[in-house]
Image (cartoon, rainbow, N blue to C red; front, side, top):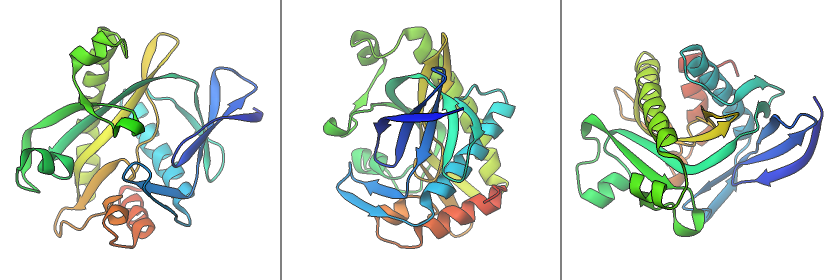
Length: 236
């Protein structure tokens, strides 16, 4: 399959057309950003680590009944994925209180959330990804009600699968975001799942093993990503 022109360039990934309109190439770059692009750096190996990490997670989810856009790894930094119409809504699940939830509600950082908290956010950097609800989604036509219900159902199924995967490797899946898209009438998990879009803590020490290391200037960002990958069996 031939890689063609660039269709989109985001903060850390680029999308390229192919000679088959049903598929695109997802390219992971070494760019790392936080605070809506206010803090940007290049971190060596990040593109490769996140590409292989994402491929492992997407294949694991697919093997367990979650429809995903992932088709196959192409090389160290690129994957072939379905060419979907993305829904501009982020689905966020919080198993442990941290980050913006603590700032918004004044709850204790590290508090276990039972049941988990589910939140929708509009994917819009200019507006700082504001929180929305199902009424906003329906009123402004961002997604159909049946697709929203499917997204919620899939997100909680993902939560059950990944909480166990990481727990078995001695880690806590604190929170994460998922993005979905439409492909030939179906709802599929898209974008990526990597330490860039979730919080992961060591179960014993509560050491941060995710992008918070970059946000908070803790250092050792890629080393932490690689540690997570090795623990769950990602071949790097």
